Image (cartoon, rainbow, N blue to C red; front, side, top):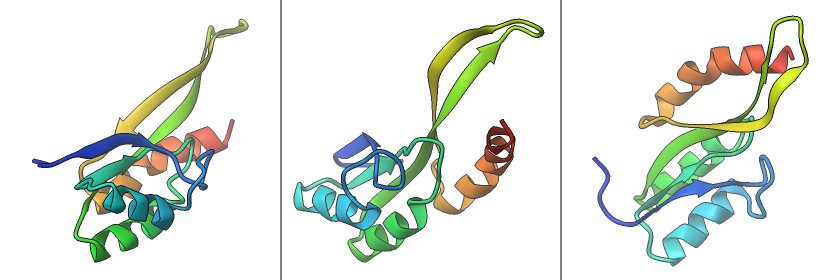
Length: 109
């Protein structure tokens, strides 16, 4: 269980954020947060850098991702577009394995 103050929805320069993963972690630390969730769009690329920075500051990282999704009717036009599916995982190491299949399928589209 996490205790303290967390920002549960952040983005880094790995997707459309304004700060590098390490810079975002430092900013969260400076603001007195206990940790944060990094939920970049369609990528896990910022999690390793954020994880390294967060461990040095004795904070908690909740790795996540926002997947761009589209629902299509078989043989028809797209029904929903621009839907975002936000997934957070409570363990840093487990996130990559949990998301690997999703990203493989997403990359093929």
